[in-house]
Length: 228
Image 1 (spheres, helix red, strand yellow):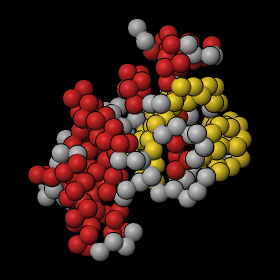
Image 2 (cartoon, one colour; image 1 turned 135 degrees about the vertical axis):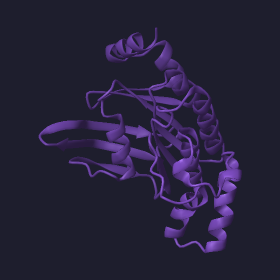
Image 3 (cartoon, helix red, strand yellow; image 1 turned 90 degrees about the vertical axis):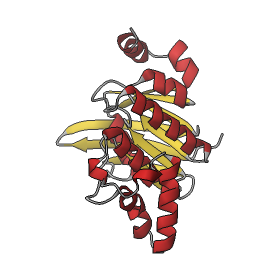
Image 4 (cartoon, one colour; image 1 turned 180 degrees about the vertical axis):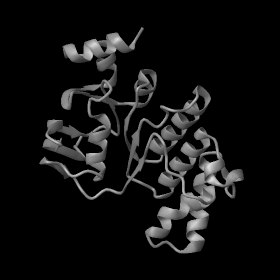
């Protein structure tokens, strides 16, 4: 598989603290999950890849320009309807109002929320808001969807629904790059695991190998601590 993104000696230092340290790896899998202990640098790595942060060192080399969308653990909802939240990004990209409405409704239908299109987004439940955020991302037809702990604040039923939607987005052709603390979820979604510890890329392994025969002691300790 050809790599769609290569990180070359990527680093980020803030306030004298090195958060990402000399990260070099290639992304070729279509579904990659980044795992690691709290504070390891997982979210920071995703923000660097999405361009929300500028690296202090190194570079990102994309195979080609790639449309992206990112969904966060706690999505920001505008003070307007669910539909208006979904079509906001489409309007910024210059799509006509009629097309925005059509694509927005289609995206809400895909996540099972078409009936709530006119409901104020901030009055929706946490799970519904996350589904609106996914619809907003999906409406942009991203080639890469980046997800930072998308189910961390949700109950099990909402988490399963979000996971289903992620699977549907992947089936539509988008690459998935995400972080999660849910190891079962990581195993179900990922083709490849990137394991990060204290800002360093420790391991990059096919998903089943990571969970059955992790190569590094750091990954072995992590799994031992996280799996009862």
